[in-house]
Length: 340
Image 1 (cartoon, one colour):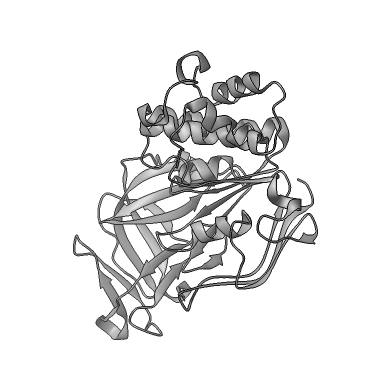
Image 2 (cartoon, rainbow, N blue to C red):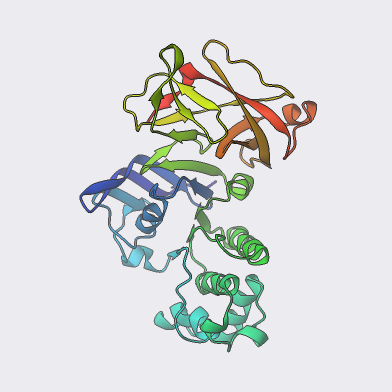
């Protein structure tokens, strides 16, 4: 892993009088793959715009290669490329869309060959697609063209905002493969905001959780939002769609968010009664994914309509016969719940 490419300190970004992003400190090594997960409205897109030097933070500093950098500054203008969730292609041919950035730079050497190569990286045949107008593309094809327009620039940093959302499975896989190829071929640093946590845990060197504009730990945290209501034995709770109840100690406020760092999975055919400080919830395993960085298995368990994330050793999965679709018990300690 390389030296820090980004070094972020005391960053605050305010929108319409409200702080939407606060990051005390974050460094991102050169050549790394960093995943950003979090609920809608958590600040993921804002974060990408700031590290993409499209916007300037209200306060704080973003250093790039050891030097403070401002939006569109020369030292970052041709090095960092952001692909937003919407493709925003121009009303031109595919070829002109892909070549647009190079033409602005007046870098026209072997242009046609570079267009063909960029399109091939995303699984599009130049002979079929180069002269096609952008309006004649499917959603997945348009997203692939948008990525090709960034890959042709060979960026030092590629920022992807929900790159596979709302597109077909083939396009999603081709986009994933092309992004990883940029990292392996050129050492491109990838920062990816996505709901596809199974992919992120499988490819990222680090995953961070962004909640209400703040970074939290490893991305494995379970964030449960209020409102909370008084429950039995002095505890507070939240009733789920199937009647199960999440129990917590009294929150600072009724709308506070509870943070459950770790929950254990216990395979069981019948409910386990709640014990002192321990809550048992019944759910179904929806996903199991190998985390590249640690070698752990990251599991997702759906309890009613609420997904929980948990960490398992490979031996636990094997010995307990865990698999997607298996009904399990999810256990957590009330005293370990933190508030956000």
